[in-house]
View 1 (cartoon, rainbow, N blue to C red):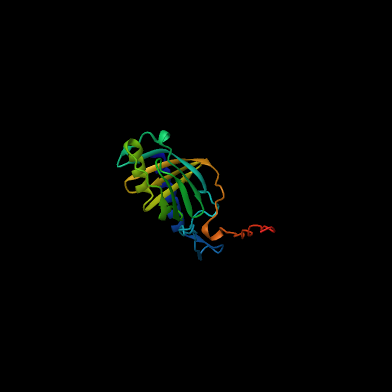
View 2: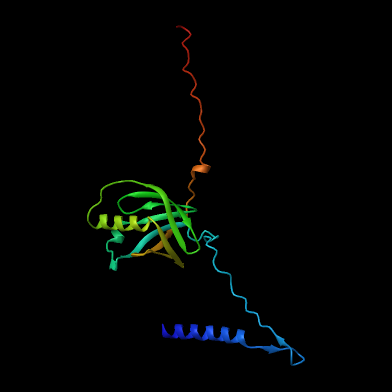
Length: 187
């Protein structure tokens, strides 16, 4: 950790000092301005490549400083597909609309089954329901997704690619009329 911090401080010092140094033109007297171009800050846009899309499985969670156990037996899973998240909180299934930002995820309106859950299953259910009731910060490292809320941190591993799910705007319903029953010529 110290090495990283020292390297970062040294790099910042070089950039700042390098930007403050003046160079002169070929005639030796006219100063040339040094320009440092910094990358633009994140605009709040979600990843364009759909890198969060796919199935995720909880592998670790800490709530109020206490590590949750039994995640492997409870099975907290979800799938991100565009602006929708569907999954299982262990005891109940849910679907929610999500607004993905560059580093944040805001959970919106949704639906869920409402089975009564007790014991460790109920505790995990309640903790995950709270996680998905507001805005969290997200970070992605290889196949690991971390969601950080004010009182909890959840870590998920990629469990599979996204599957195509129709959204209400793309779902079509075709109505085929039922033919009338045949008439009996003898009647």
